[in-house]
Amino acid sequence: MRGPICAAAALLPGVGEGRLAGHRESCLRCRAHDARRRSLARELAALGAEVAPAPDTLQAAVMARLGPQDAVDPRRALAARAVARHAAAAAVAVAVLAVLLAGLARRHSRATV
Amino acid sequence: MPGGVQPDERELLARARSGDGEAFGELVRRHQETVYTLALRLVGPDLAADVAQEAFLRAWRALPRFRGEAAFSTWLHRITVNTAWTLRRRDRRHLTQPLEGDFEDTAPLPERAGELAEARAGLLRAIAALNPGQRAVLVLRDLYGWSGAEVARELAITETTVKVRLHRARARLRSLLGGER
Image (cartoon, rainbow over all chains, first blue to last red; front, top):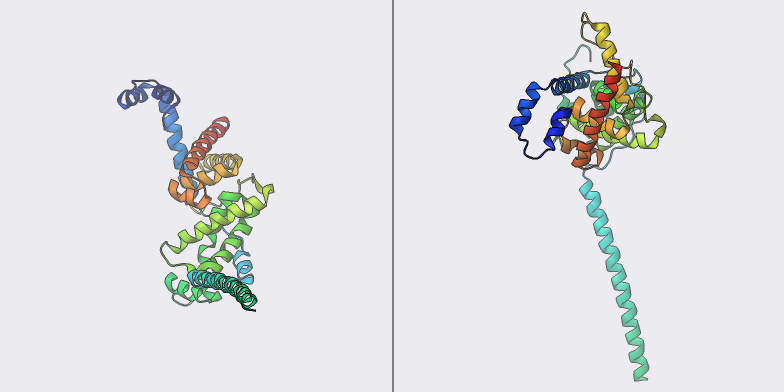
């Protein structure tokens, strides 16, 4: 991340990284900005390494609420659902076919009477 | 576990995956501080215990599906982030929790302890002042060192959004701290 002046300079056409680096070396504001940025990054990383004590009751509260676990393999449940879907579609197709055949049979019997 | 050899985490996981609550209890004991701390950073003290508890329960339910592709702690942290995100949405009252005073130093006190503690309290106040979206991204990227892609995946946002939020969060933090220091 660049300092405020470097950032502005970067917007100007024809300003290369070399010139920016040179500017950063000599610009007190940019150097101060970079130093603040690095210091903040260090402080944040240090905060991430800290660990807070958990409440004494946390483990007991979790253990008191343990319920059933999910299925071992979610693919089995998905496969079962897919089979059920296909079976339902096949049943609908058979029913439609049966209705059509019954209609045809009725027409045929009327025609022959 | 006094008087005995501590069971290997893999063994505990295998037992917990097959429904052994006692083994899972031991895993909770081992990971509760890191999970609670992550929750604390993400949602503040009022909601952190709820998030940690819910995260462990979700982990228990999902454990049979845990394949060990990532470390158990990494998997647990992902669940914690998701849980924090869900519970925070449910409980909008906890948008900006004061975070100061929630962390205990385990390291020996340095000479400049007072000054450092004050600086850290200021940093925690500044983090707490960020909006939840910016705070989550900053915590995961700058405190925990997650990659942009990991943060994007876990928060269900794009990597571009991660970059924008991070940039704004850092700028806001610098501006808040500039006023304090």
